[in-house]
Amino acid sequence: MKRKALALLLTVATAATMLVGCGDKPADSNESSTPVESNSESEATPDSSVEAPAEEGKVLNIYCWNEEFKTRVTDHYPGYEVVDGTHGKIGDVDVVWNITPSDDNAYQNNLDATLLGQADAAADDKIDLFLLEADYALKYVDTPYTMNIKDLGITDADIADQYKYTQDIVTDSTGAIKGLSWQGCPGALFYNRQAAIDILGSDDAATVQAAVKDWDTFVATAADAKAAGYKMCSSVNDTYRVYSNNVSSKWVVDGKINIDDNIMKWVEDSKVLVDNGYAGTHDLWSADWSAGFFPEGKVFCYFGPAWLINFCMSKGEEGAIATDGGWGITEGPQGFFWGGTWMAAAAGTDNPSLVKDLMLKLTCDKDIMVDIVRADDDFVNNKPAMEEMANDASYSSDVFGGINPLSYYVAGADSIDLSNLSAYDQGCNEEFQNAMKDYFTGKADLDTALETFKKNVVVKYPELTY
Image (tube, rainbow, N blue to C red):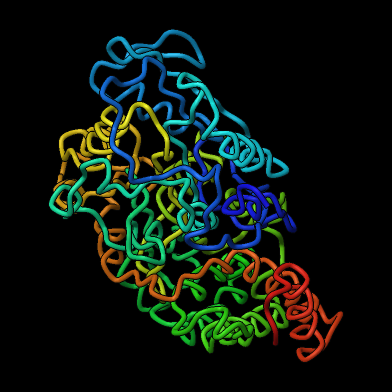
């Protein structure tokens, strides 16, 4: 079949329930797709190692799903001129923003269909740069439709100050890095300060950390939270990503579904939390889940990166804990990351030099990185920038009552290990949480829930066994 490398991209499974980037709104409608084959070839497959055209194009086409990256370019890329909501200028190059929301997998479907026609498209219509999220990055990275950044002229020295895990996410099966992110998204535990006082007698970060230092201690503290009238966390789905980021094996080993011990630890701990009324089973982004953003919701803590509390926890709404500066921050039981957005150069772009410069300016320029932190409260993918800002007494967050929270993120960023990342992660994580909800709520026993999970994964990925 023609265009075999991307044909599998059009096979779509069930909708995702986990957010991997926020920006304007939760991207909670991305769908998982069958992992693509590596090194596939066809007569229409672009060659990502071809030499740059002698004269570059006059139109730069950027594909994304919301306004977040556009605002970073508009606000921070030197010389960018706004034309209107979907057009800009960089020198004599017209910038065209093709923004398709993620709802019902529309962004990926549009991107897939356009990439299939990339080789035959007119120069001004070719995709030059497109954005990826962590959960489906490997779907595109392990195809020739994305360029090795070295073919753009970006060197190891250029990206030496980035957090390594952000590069691991977009590294293909041959070891080539196929994208770069301006964001680092290490997570932390956000706690309701008033709840900490009511439960622990203090809202000091060190006191709270001692009460959540590992999962056994976390579960024990949940009993104290209940006694004080609080849920420990809104939903056991809040904690899932922390456990799943700290596995010691992959979801699939030699073609067979594998459930890591740390995933089963989540099941064990979550069952205790639910059975004892310490946490609910609400879906993320639901009204019940978000009730704890307000004092009357009576929730002690949430887990997330900087974007969660800045963009998704009712900041600015009257009476919200974030609006009133009532959140505290500490490391939590384990380090983890959540989300991020990656820039990928499309093979066949006629603007490789401009794409390279966008990547370098927005991911490697320390001064620009610092400006993004100050202006947007983003955690950027540049260690010197983040270390400088973490020690900057002039930087503070109103959400956290005027303290500088960055040191808590920095503390966990270098410890993130994605060596067990696989192309099956999104689908397996979705199906596992769906199946375990029946176990937590008493609709199925554990063995039945595990069997349901495995059967549903094999439906999604027929090449797997269990």
